[in-house]
Image (tube, rainbow, N blue to C red; front, side, top):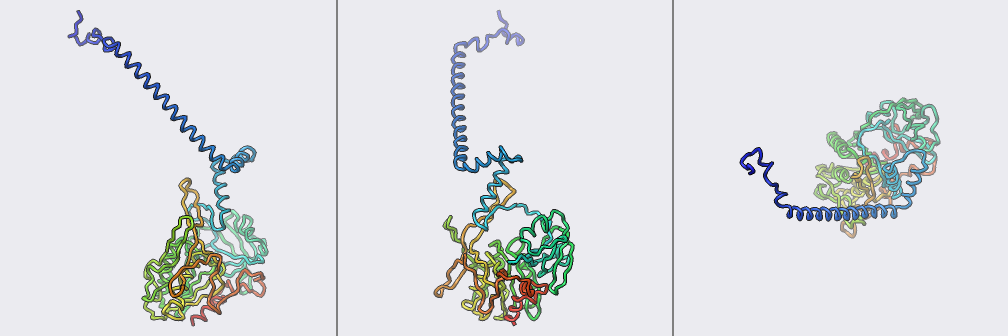
Length: 446
């Protein structure tokens, strides 16, 4: 007799579940095998479906981009260096964006400061190179380089007549070495050798000079970076000096952010109540999205507030004043021009007709890579105008904005040699007060 009361023998002698239910076990086992088999079949079908879908997707890509794929295949097979698919994809993307329009393209997204000399130059039709801007506290400024210097030689080799790209290349200013010996011709005709060492340049985008006699001068280099904060600092200096007349220099300003534009505009436009906040500055039309966005002045900061019509404004522009510079000029003309402003003779525009770039760009951070930014033309912008006694909007794309009658200056890039008779000094001079546009501005504000 089996002793079921003995715990030690219980498992040894008790009939197992499988022994007692052998028929049921066979049925359950068969069902489990069938279910497992069915699941395997279903899984295989799903896997084949998605594999086929992925293959179809890849084939679609290959069929949609046959040239790109063939080019990559040939590069992979024959090019003397190893090129990854990622490298090729970046090259292809950069090349594509460069063919869209001259204002669109891919750039590095890094905001880390880079080593530079800290100056800009302009090249005329005869490849004479004139320094147009020198950043504050930059190696160029510390070496003695100033606006209006004519570049004569770099590292002992003449650069007169050289293409601008060559001058900016590795053999000259783009040399990997951090030191450059630059020979320049000064406004007084003397030549000087300057030694510059590249360093991190974090200059201001706006500069203020007190000319005296109630006149202040603000040079706005761009609408990028810290331009809004830099301009506000200049505007505060203008007010602290008790100035009532402003020379706003937008020459060679290629534009930038609409948000920065909205802040700066609030200091320069006004309505009949001397208010600026909310005044429409530009409208951006997108044919792709069928959207119209109006950007307005941000804040009631008009510099002429409380001056009872004593405030005067002279705006300097040239053929390189573009985009946001033209948008700001259009708003100033509308709100401060004689046709609309309650203050007569408040505004004069001096210089060369502007670039005529009435299109706007937007910058996109790419989700697929942190290395690049895509800047892309997204639409046309319009500036306010008076139309049959009411405010309307007009696009100036391809149509330069003109200056005030009697205040036009010849375009710097005309087909003449600006070194002859020192003509370039009328546009870029070591002594700012000797430039033609400044002289005309001082006369207009007198």
